Length: 275
Image: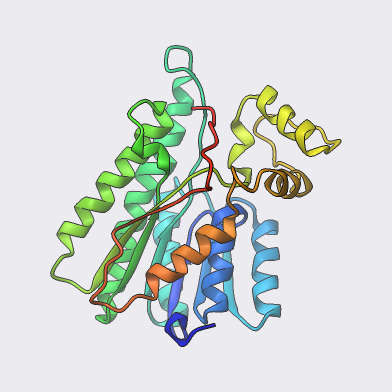
């Protein structure tokens, strides 16, 4: 790995890190030398990620939590600082989508998306910035948005990602005189469990396309075999979580004089996903 991408002595917090993009980001930052503190809903899945990082010689800790619990989210950042002495990188990755027509959708699905994708991200930004300020050496806040924010008709999920872009731009203006960079990353279609809340017919079609004989249910974890085979078959329409992770690593390894404000990470061909 190039020396310019060394994070030795740095500490990072990554939310939504038990699978998908968050998991890949956590592993990428750890390989570069950062001590990573990871959150996710399932402790068992987090333990697997932490074990893999440690076995590869990295430093990692995992804390199962619901990011909607803002006290727990603050506690994650506090633990990172107390255990390692600092925070350098805050990655607000946790997010979810409930596709559906606005005229028919359950308002509780709207509430969950805004709570996770917006309110929790705001708290993560606030807690992370305060912790980065404390050691006085600067750092980065990375917000994982979506290319849905580039569309005006991307439904309730897209509205939450428009909000993320607004939050990132506002923080960037607030922090102009401080050595804290704010990076807004907008992934396109990625082969992850993010699709678990899509319409069952869409998910079943994915399974048939991949030739995977597996029961696919809305809201349930998608089989790893399914995700791997779909990505391999649709490499022109689906990026991998590692593609996003390597982009995040690149942005946080830039010198303080360089602020990568926004990055779009998408496959060569755009895949029309439910909204």
